[in-house]
Each structure stands twice: as C-alpha cells, then as structure tokens.
Image (cartoon, rainbow, N blue to C red):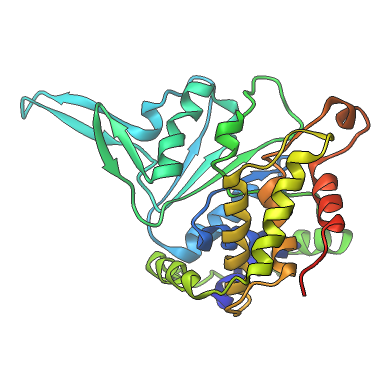
Length: 306
C-alpha cells in the first residue's frame, strides 16, 4: 500500500493529500466526488489508480443525452437464439470513473444510486450484484454551469468524500512541465499492478481491528450534532455523515499503520466527508462563507479528547 501511495504521489505532483484521501475512501468502502477546473489532473488521478490496481476499470463520459441503460445495461432480443439477452453496462467494474457527472440529467444520475449504496443494479426486473470491491469516482467542474444538472442531496450523500483539486504551486507547476520535456520523460512504467482489489478487501477486513475509543465516538457525535444546531446551516449532517466520518477516520489510521483512531484522524477526514452534505443559509452564502469554514469553526469549538 505504501508503494502504491508513493507511485501515485510521484505521478500526481502536488496532490499528496488528495491521493491519500482517495485511497482512504477506497479502503473505507466509500465513493469519491472529485471537483476541480479542467486540466488539473482529475481524470489522470483515477486513471493512474486503475493502472496501478489492475482489475476491471471503466470510464464513462456523461452527456445530456445519456440514458440510465447506458450506465447499468439493458435487455435485447437475440434473434439467433430466439431469447432475450442481458447486456451489462460499464457499471460492472471494480473502478468506474463517472466523468463530468453533472452533465447528465437527474434520471441518468439516479441510475447510480442503487449501485453506489447497495452494490447491485436492477435490469428489467432482475437484480445483479456488482463486482466487489466496487468503487465510483465522479468528477465535476465547479465553474461551468451551462448545460449542467446539479447533483441532488440524495446523490451527494452517496459519496463518502468530496475532494477539491486546485491549481498547483509554482514549484509543482514547473515539475509538471519538466515531465513533458523529451529528455526528462520517464521510461515506461512497469505495468504490473502494485496492489490488487483482493488486497483492498483484506484491508477492509483489517478495519474491524482498528480501535475507536468512546471519547472519539463522543467527539464525532458532538461534531455531527453541532452542525444541526447552528443557524448558519439550513441542513446539518445526517447520521450517515457521522458513519462516514467514523469509517474514514479508521481507514486513515490504517493507512498510517495504526490500529487506533486519534482526534487528528477525525479532523483530517471531517472536511472531505462533510463539505458536500451541508447546506448553507442564504446569509452565509451572501457573506462568502463556505461549508469548509463552518466545519473548521465547529471543530475548533469542540474540546479535543485526551
């Protein structure tokens, strides 16, 4: 796992924290929404993970005319065999990249609800299990809204994390550019996977061994309930959000080679786990506030367990 992290950080310059959060979500059994302007490496991040993990990976470019059957599959009549045949869609994969998910209508977005929550899809009245592990990474552009469909709260709640990617620093930008010089291009990377999807299942089993003290549970509970009580939010965090913070904290600790959760683990995963589940009040939006600011202020107001 450490080799996987290092290789991804090497390929994705300046994205160390997002890379580790991406793998944290994978180990925790959740899905990830990647948000960032075009051209900063969202798709590259997922493609690099698929190359280093092996298994079955599918990429779907979401468009306004896409139908749910384009995602989950459909039934056709086979004239030669004189019977109906099920054609499975790209959702039948270990890793599915849903590129620009907000460019497709809600009807098609909803096709992923059952898949992301229950690990199965229903085609023509028949339920089919998806591969295990099943990991969805969706991307969206935060600045271009023409021809897009905002993800509803129920859809956003299916994502464990919302990761935001920003422009790289000056030094990182220079390093990215240098990788594209003819004399600096890396030789072909070994195509052998560094990690397997079966190993991810083993990591998930190890999550059960990570100890969470009662004081940490109290810390997470207080955080979740405080988001519901503040007048700066129209909608606070749900119980599912609390479970997300708990599981992500355990996964982050496991990636740090620890079998116990600390308050710092909770602080690390709180923003990506909660930022897309909160709805700001109109006054806060007018003042330029963000859900990240409110999460930070809420964490700062809660006594840290010793």
